[in-house]
Image (cartoon, rainbow, N blue to C red; front, top):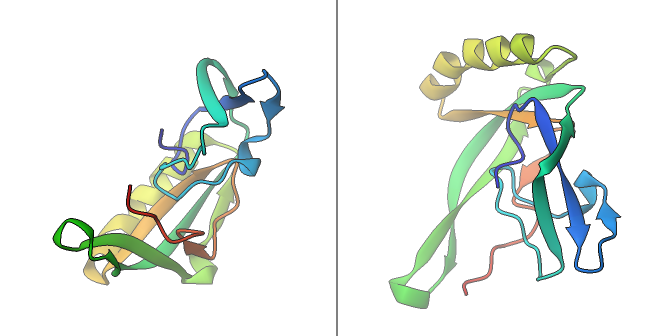
Length: 132
């Protein structure tokens, strides 16, 4: 489930015993790979309307994950252009701003990332992925 993007809704998270988790207490990478550890599931039908959005620009690269299956790589990113980080209370304005940055970001090998009710992260992923 992709959570670090511009969306009009926020899914709710629940543990196996039915307790609700705040969205930001669930560890995730910026492109939605949730690391559940078997403890959390998402109920998208119980989503609520989002109230604010953020857009940021990242320098992206690849990092070596390990030798398994002949070797594998994963995306890493670091926040750049702090002056370009913007916050919005209107989803359409956030989408327009994100779109306006894409050509410049592509030309500079950067990635424009949208966040729904989440502060832009300084870098991603938070922890190195593990080969399963």
